[in-house]
Length: 635
Ligand SMILES: *[C@@H]1O[C@H](CO)[C@@H](O)[C@H](O)[C@H]1NC(C)=O
Ligand SMILES: *[C@@H]1O[C@H](CO)[C@@H](O)[C@H](O)[C@H]1NC(C)=O
Image 1 (tube, rainbow, N blue to C red):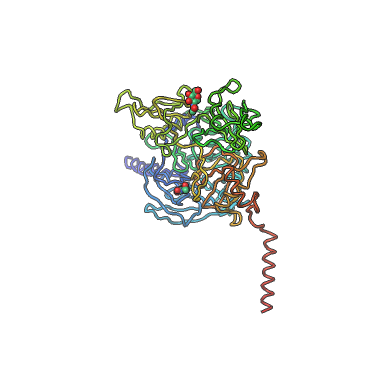
Image 2 (tube, protein in one colour):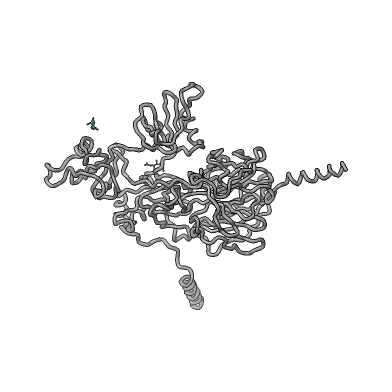
């Protein structure tokens, strides 16, 4: 009897230890169970920039991350210890997704051309058994907009197409083509998923997929208005319904691209790890015994705060150079035209006089905040506020003071001196104090670092008191104003404002305006060489473009160029400027525009397009064959 029990135990134990994909013993609890605070917020620096997908491998109890820049796979012990890496350049052109299949076998996806490849990653950094399943979808994915994520449940593969359209695809075992699972997700009844960055399964669940929606339209916090958000979507495979969404830290990630879940052996908790470019990582935990229901997550955790679309109000003072070719809209802004060219020498004025009038005069009873001066005519406007400032051929507008600081330590080591956000109205945390010098206080480096790692809220701005070694962290900087003791810094400058310089450099690398909210055209694409363009052409196209749908003087103000794919975006204004791994962003002033038009003409001579394929192409080929045959006869 004893022997039989012992034998039974011996056979049972290895089985339990070998729990692997499809047999992990857990599913993803309702989103509410993950709470309201990330338990870890860090940079997964063991993967170089361009982190684009991640999977937990139950058999090694490690994470496997992919990088679309160097096309390598990285094995990491949570949170950030590099174990091994594999160079898979030979297998992929644009590595975007990875999913553990059991043991050391993985599936990886290529964005372009679209495909899923199975591969075994050996412990020594070599790989074997690489097999590409099916390549290509119908209709064909737009360039650089193919599969962003992959997962396998049972014998079926699921993959997600990023955009245009965002769509879930399915590949049954042995099938020779991907089939459309979801249709265009932007047409989904619940949330309109416009762009997807990642896809994963949820433990042993067989009817659920988790999507990392980079952009979707959904009802916002006030329950009525709809706006673009980011979030994790729980998708039911059998009927295509969306059961719930999770916003949280994902709202604040620059470019979320990877998601994975696992059960931590020590704590027994289910972990949800979201990663994104460059190597952002955010971890939430849930207790599997949690009894909340699916869909019970609070609105605040489900949704993102509506992105404030910054008004283009001129914030440049005389010292900053002002805003050339701009004037506040006098139809809707309180103003006085105080100098005119009616009687030169009498009714006109100098620039200094114009400034002084703003400094000393009320405008219709309110403080003068902006003044605009026309150098040629010596005319002057003073304004109370500055609404809808836009192109004006004659005026330069100046702000009396810059209401927001927006200086990074890298660009301005002293930050914005004697300034601090208003702590009564800005969400904040006083993280270092002078209560116990040497213990509760901190250095400026530490203050900055605490801002980067803060988990209670996303810290965008920090203020430091050099004398007392005190530090404030802020979520947003409301009511910024004079403060005797503090200097204020932003982690990231939210606006680029760098033109191309005389040696062809300049601009802001890895930045692009948000194309979902900014009027734009993608004028060059990498579909074929004829549709691509050089950086010089991109700049010239900006000079030759007016967004007439906006208004007659809506001139291209920003352009973004992708050096690798030779792609070009043109923008009118720049809303929601954000991180983008591929693009460099440039501003273009009206002066530069006029200069470029002088050299290259006012309109685009020929819009870059791919040559027509079908009929026309074969006719050319036919004609060529005919000529060749004629030539042969002649010889
Ligand atoms: C603006 O006006 C104030 C008060 O009249 C004066 O003290 C200040 O010097 C003026 N600023 C400039 C730059 O002239
Ligand atoms: C132009 O920008 C590049 C960096 O993009 C910089 O190295 C170079 O010094 C700049 N040249 C001028 C003339 O400012």
